[in-house]
Amino acid sequence: MLGNWSLGDYFKKEQLPWILDFFTKDLGLSQEKLWVSVFEGNDQVPKDEESAEIWKKLGIPDSRIYFYDAKKNWWSRTGSPDEMPIGEIGGPDSEIFYDFGKELKLHENSPFKNEECHPNCDCGRYMEIGNSVFMQYKKIGENKLEELPQKNVDFGGGLERIAAVVNGDPDIYKSDLFIGLINELERNSNAKYEDKKRDFRIIVDHIKASVFLVANGIVPSNKQHGYVIRRLLRRSAIKMHKIGAVKNIIETSRKVANQVVDTYKDRYLKDNNALDISVEIGDEVNKFSGVLDKGIKLIDKLINEGRKIDSDLAFDLFQTYGFPLEATEEYLESYGKRFTVEDKIKYDDRFRKHQEISRTTSAGIFKGGLADQSPEVIRLHTATHLLLAALRKVLGEHIVQKGQNITKDRSRFDFPNTQKLTDEEIKRVENLINDIVSKDLPVNFNIMPKNEAENTGAIHAFN
Image (spheres, one colour):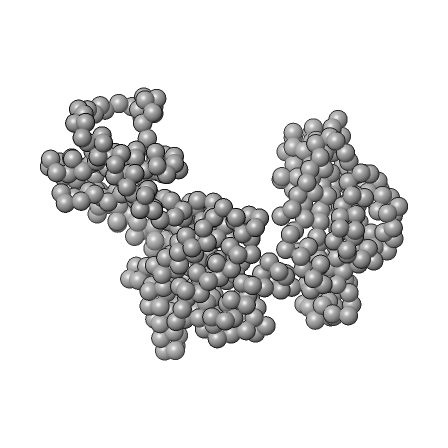
């Protein structure tokens, strides 16, 4: 998303001409191809005649200016004026659309062919490329808004959409930002983009998103942001299987990831190592590929036998192979099958019961602190604290404990990092730990409330 803002510096009469200049003079779009929309007004806010008049003066005729209600041409964090809480600010917006023309017959070949075509039609003929939001009202009571003393502008424009209209093709996946990824996927599968558009789009979109997440220090996991990446890559892996990239899903994922980095390396990813990002993504797909292969083979077998894939079978796939529900749902789509709402409710019930049983069974097994109080384990536990401190000093304060397991023979410490440690970094960590150990310092521990521990500067893993 591209954006620019004004906080009281300028408003409609300055911003609308500037954005039109950007599209027509800087990007070379024909003004004859541009249509605009403005707010039609309601019982709380007047019709936005000011924006409409500005567009007319700029050469946009009445026939290409459309008025829409608050569902289309009003913005606030919570929606229309009726939905805004007291104290919320918002305002009308004016959208700019690019018309790909009648010649492509996008409307005639769409599900909306029997309806009137207009800029907000979903047929694809018109593509929104910019939206100027005029933050000029504040809600002060029920059905009552007042104008703000300082009026602001928030403009947003879709980078990929703008690239598509500059290329003159309504398919954003054929723009410079995606075509390299599409070509890489075609080279490594048994399918062509034109035959499998939806699958190709999902794969390149999900891998692209994952690349940017990894580049920002987020790694695949079962929690929060990490699980977003995990689900994105799992879904893309299923789609790769569908388009015939079965034998090289891992390598194909890496290659597409590398293409993303190559596309954006001069702007957004210039400080990132393409190899490290692609390895992280490839490793995650590798972890899932075995599970994917087993789950898909079983689903294929059951469907060929005429069996129904219901909530019980989906849960068995999860319990036996670790095949998640979303993966089962995704793959079933290739057979034109879907889970019912009832199936999902039953699955969730079984999953909750499974968690309760697991918690009850493990209650007396997994306790806080050390499972073994032997001198060997205590020494390794202390060494692990030193390891965390050394890693944070060498790599940075983003290093935190994500998992730990200590036995008499070894300590395993899990931590997030965007790339593999270099030999030099490992040596620096070792030297820091050995230096502290060599000083034979006394080791003490105290039990205290969490807030007191935090005040001492203690690092913890129980947020």
